[in-house]
Length: 96
Image (cartoon, rainbow, N blue to C red):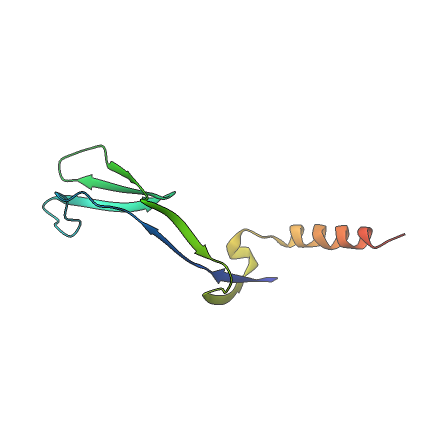
């Protein structure tokens, strides 16, 4: 099976938390998470989470990769069939 190189780039997004909310206070905040540059805070006893947009858009440093790792292609959804198709396409691109 093929391998892939996975590069983990560094990115930062900044969220301004309302003064009355303490994310570390488990009596106030049940959970919080970030998805698509939005911070979601589920307050204790409140069903719908509070949505906070990033104060600054995420900035990606793609000049240099952070951590590198070589992993199995299968773990990332690649199959041997796709690999064979890509090789066939490359062969046909180079034929006259």
